[in-house]
Length: 497
Ligand code: ZN
Image 1 (cartoon, rainbow, N blue to C red):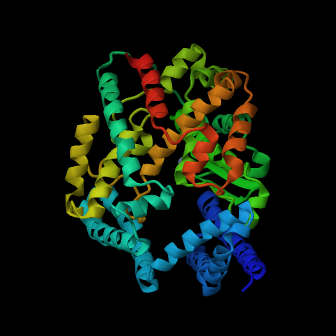
Image 2 (image 1 turned 90 degrees about the horizontal axis):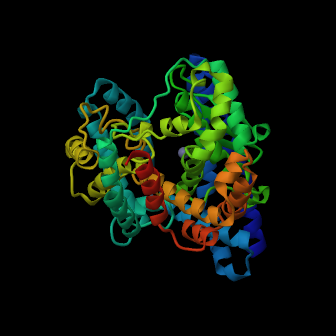
């Protein structure tokens, strides 16, 4: 195989895989957002399974590796796109190939049952139902580390799946800094007598939909190149660069959950929409990592969406739509959207305590993968850690160890990316503020400088750079969690001390 035929072969595969994945995504979107006839589920499931099998088969075929090896052999002759493509394809191919096919098949079938068992266990608050599944899943995850190969701690192999290049050394240092700096802040908040105002009322869904449109417009998520769906658990889904969809969930009594899920998903979507189409030709139209994707959603949701400047522009819109805000001022709104208090459920946690929820999971996963603790001991250890870090002990398994879907979905190694992403976001915000006044842009209801800065420094690069290099190029220094800690200290000391 020559260099030219290798590039042609990979381009052909990319085209086929993109088409197959596009079809799978549409099937998934349709089922998630519109609801589909019960009787069609089986055939739809079969079709989705066939599509993903076909996509994987094309990818894992021996000629893919042959092409990768040919291009690795003449790496210096390749252009920037081709180099990144070969690096990324090589990584994914070797990981996928490392898992014995019969093991993968058994694992897939295990996972297909585990999620519904987990749901049942959570609903019945009975850990013993899901424990045997967790045992098998974690055992498989441990074997994955061997198949992938690792240096030092086996958990490094799993971390790398969600944030390429991140190791336990980096994560340990990061989380111990968070533990040291955030824990006293949480204590201060718990003991503070400052009571932020509460948003109460009934907020008609129709009006909330109007607010969603306004939020998309303000943030710069281009709805003409996407769509807004309504679901139980909000997500963002890319069909093509020009069709990036977001979802949200409306509750009449809870206005904030939809506001912040829209801003969060818009942050993900803007990242996807800002990637140049040429990256699709090289299978590089993707985030640099999970953490990097999360950095964008959290930058919009927290650093911008929960800022004073944003409260100032949000309030007039709320007053236009909901009479409940007639007597409010923007300072009240700022305080109301920044309520911080220890709580049990991660996905409902505030900006201050959120990363402590992640530390609990990180420490447990690391220990279980190393074989230092047993799956049967997870509920008790979980509760101990909540008590230690947040000062509260979950009264049930549902509010404790059974609250997340991740372990039943085989996603060990995923959690740290939520906290790392937030820390990346703080570092980007710091760099952006050196280039221009971010709050002033928000107050002027003009997100163009923000979106342009992110497009230029992060979004347009897709998967060309590794996460550590991307952040270095964008901010002029290596990843530095100090910005995140400084941000939290400044904000919450002022709010609560
Ligand atoms: Zn997200």
